[in-house]
Length: 166
Image (cartoon, rainbow, N blue to C red; front, side):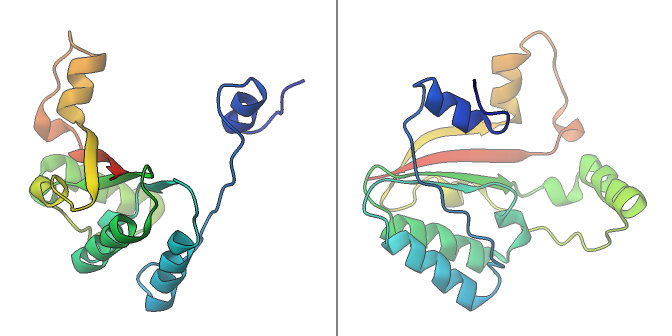
Protein backbone atom coordinates (compact mmCIF):
# COMPACT_ATOMS: atom_id res chain seq x y z
CA UNK A 1 0.00 0.00 0.00
CA UNK A 2 1.33 3.42 -0.95
CA UNK A 3 1.45 6.33 1.50
CA UNK A 4 -1.56 8.64 1.30
CA UNK A 5 0.48 11.82 1.55
CA UNK A 6 3.30 13.14 -0.53
CA UNK A 7 4.19 12.29 -4.07
CA UNK A 8 7.83 11.98 -3.02
CA UNK A 9 7.07 9.10 -0.64
CA UNK A 10 5.26 7.18 -3.37
CA UNK A 11 8.06 7.78 -5.84
CA UNK A 12 10.64 6.46 -3.37
CA UNK A 13 8.58 3.31 -2.75
CA UNK A 14 8.16 2.75 -6.47
CA UNK A 15 11.90 3.11 -7.02
CA UNK A 16 11.51 6.27 -9.09
CA UNK A 17 13.42 8.48 -6.67
CA UNK A 18 16.18 7.66 -4.21
CA UNK A 19 15.48 7.95 -0.50
CA UNK A 20 16.71 11.34 0.63
CA UNK A 21 17.06 13.53 3.64
CA UNK A 22 15.00 16.75 3.53
CA UNK A 23 15.75 19.93 5.46
CA UNK A 24 13.05 22.57 5.65
CA UNK A 25 14.42 25.83 7.03
CA UNK A 26 11.51 28.02 8.21
CA UNK A 27 13.26 31.36 8.61
CA UNK A 28 12.82 35.05 7.86
CA UNK A 29 15.63 35.62 5.38
CA UNK A 30 15.44 39.37 5.93
CA UNK A 31 17.14 38.78 9.29
CA UNK A 32 20.91 38.27 9.46
CA UNK A 33 20.64 35.44 11.99
CA UNK A 34 18.44 33.50 9.57
CA UNK A 35 20.87 34.05 6.71
CA UNK A 36 23.63 32.71 8.97
CA UNK A 37 21.51 29.62 9.74
CA UNK A 38 21.00 29.11 6.01
CA UNK A 39 24.76 29.45 5.35
CA UNK A 40 25.54 27.05 8.18
CA UNK A 41 23.08 24.48 6.80
CA UNK A 42 24.67 24.72 3.35
CA UNK A 43 28.19 24.22 4.68
CA UNK A 44 27.17 21.07 6.60
CA UNK A 45 26.09 19.25 3.44
CA UNK A 46 28.55 16.53 2.41
CA UNK A 47 26.81 15.60 -0.83
CA UNK A 48 24.94 17.43 -3.60
CA UNK A 49 21.59 18.86 -2.58
CA UNK A 50 18.63 20.70 -4.08
CA UNK A 51 17.65 24.26 -3.07
CA UNK A 52 14.34 25.79 -4.18
CA UNK A 53 13.81 29.57 -4.06
CA UNK A 54 10.21 29.71 -5.26
CA UNK A 55 8.17 32.68 -4.10
CA UNK A 56 11.03 33.95 -1.92
CA UNK A 57 13.34 36.28 -3.83
CA UNK A 58 10.63 38.74 -5.00
CA UNK A 59 9.88 39.47 -1.33
CA UNK A 60 13.47 40.25 -0.35
CA UNK A 61 15.50 43.36 -1.04
CA UNK A 62 17.69 42.80 -4.11
CA UNK A 63 21.05 42.80 -2.25
CA UNK A 64 19.74 40.17 0.19
CA UNK A 65 18.36 37.99 -2.62
CA UNK A 66 21.65 38.12 -4.52
CA UNK A 67 23.55 37.36 -1.29
CA UNK A 68 21.53 34.14 -0.83
CA UNK A 69 22.29 33.03 -4.38
CA UNK A 70 25.97 33.76 -3.85
CA UNK A 71 25.92 31.74 -0.60
CA UNK A 72 24.64 28.76 -2.60
CA UNK A 73 27.29 29.27 -5.28
CA UNK A 74 30.00 29.43 -2.63
CA UNK A 75 28.97 26.72 -0.15
CA UNK A 76 27.04 24.02 -2.01
CA UNK A 77 28.73 20.79 -3.06
CA UNK A 78 29.49 20.25 -6.73
CA UNK A 79 26.48 18.74 -8.50
CA UNK A 80 23.95 20.52 -6.27
CA UNK A 81 21.00 22.09 -8.05
CA UNK A 82 19.25 25.39 -7.32
CA UNK A 83 15.94 26.67 -8.72
CA UNK A 84 15.41 30.42 -8.65
CA UNK A 85 12.03 32.10 -9.24
CA UNK A 86 11.92 35.85 -10.01
CA UNK A 87 9.72 38.60 -11.39
CA UNK A 88 11.31 40.43 -14.31
CA UNK A 89 11.79 44.18 -14.51
CA UNK A 90 8.75 45.68 -16.20
CA UNK A 91 6.21 43.58 -14.31
CA UNK A 92 5.78 46.39 -11.77
CA UNK A 93 4.06 48.59 -14.38
CA UNK A 94 2.05 45.91 -16.18
CA UNK A 95 -1.73 45.66 -16.25
CA UNK A 96 -1.64 42.12 -14.85
CA UNK A 97 0.29 43.34 -11.80
CA UNK A 98 -2.42 45.94 -11.18
CA UNK A 99 -5.01 43.13 -11.28
CA UNK A 100 -2.93 41.01 -8.88
CA UNK A 101 -2.66 43.94 -6.44
CA UNK A 102 -6.43 44.53 -6.65
CA UNK A 103 -7.01 40.83 -5.88
CA UNK A 104 -4.66 40.91 -2.88
CA UNK A 105 -6.36 44.04 -1.57
CA UNK A 106 -9.93 42.83 -2.11
CA UNK A 107 -9.72 39.10 -1.31
CA UNK A 108 -6.84 38.85 1.14
CA UNK A 109 -6.71 42.29 2.74
CA UNK A 110 -3.00 42.62 1.90
CA UNK A 111 -1.76 46.10 1.16
CA UNK A 112 2.05 45.74 1.00
CA UNK A 113 3.00 44.89 -2.57
CA UNK A 114 6.63 45.96 -2.67
CA UNK A 115 8.02 43.17 -4.81
CA UNK A 116 11.63 43.13 -5.95
CA UNK A 117 12.15 42.89 -9.68
CA UNK A 118 15.22 41.52 -11.41
CA UNK A 119 16.91 41.85 -14.73
CA UNK A 120 17.25 38.45 -16.39
CA UNK A 121 20.96 39.09 -17.04
CA UNK A 122 21.60 39.12 -13.27
CA UNK A 123 21.04 35.34 -13.27
CA UNK A 124 22.58 34.25 -16.54
CA UNK A 125 26.25 34.22 -15.50
CA UNK A 126 26.57 33.47 -11.81
CA UNK A 127 30.08 32.28 -10.99
CA UNK A 128 30.32 28.62 -9.91
CA UNK A 129 26.89 27.85 -11.41
CA UNK A 130 26.07 26.29 -14.76
CA UNK A 131 22.70 27.39 -16.15
CA UNK A 132 20.81 24.17 -16.98
CA UNK A 133 17.45 25.63 -17.96
CA UNK A 134 15.65 28.95 -18.04
CA UNK A 135 11.87 28.97 -18.37
CA UNK A 136 9.47 31.89 -18.72
CA UNK A 137 5.91 32.28 -19.92
CA UNK A 138 7.03 32.43 -23.55
CA UNK A 139 8.81 29.07 -23.35
CA UNK A 140 5.95 27.47 -21.41
CA UNK A 141 3.44 28.78 -23.96
CA UNK A 142 5.46 27.42 -26.86
CA UNK A 143 5.98 24.05 -25.17
CA UNK A 144 2.50 23.38 -23.74
CA UNK A 145 0.01 25.53 -25.68
CA UNK A 146 1.51 26.10 -29.12
CA UNK A 147 -1.91 26.67 -30.71
CA UNK A 148 -3.04 29.30 -28.19
CA UNK A 149 -1.23 32.62 -28.03
CA UNK A 150 -1.27 34.70 -24.88
CA UNK A 151 -0.33 38.35 -24.77
CA UNK A 152 2.64 39.22 -22.59
CA UNK A 153 0.63 41.89 -20.73
CA UNK A 154 -1.96 39.26 -19.70
CA UNK A 155 0.55 37.10 -17.83
CA UNK A 156 2.72 37.53 -14.77
CA UNK A 157 6.23 37.65 -16.18
CA UNK A 158 7.88 35.14 -13.92
CA UNK A 159 11.11 33.35 -14.72
CA UNK A 160 12.55 30.14 -13.37
CA UNK A 161 16.24 29.29 -13.58
CA UNK A 162 17.73 25.87 -12.86
CA UNK A 163 21.42 25.92 -11.96
CA UNK A 164 23.93 23.23 -11.16
CA UNK A 165 26.95 23.91 -8.98
CA UNK A 166 30.17 23.36 -10.95
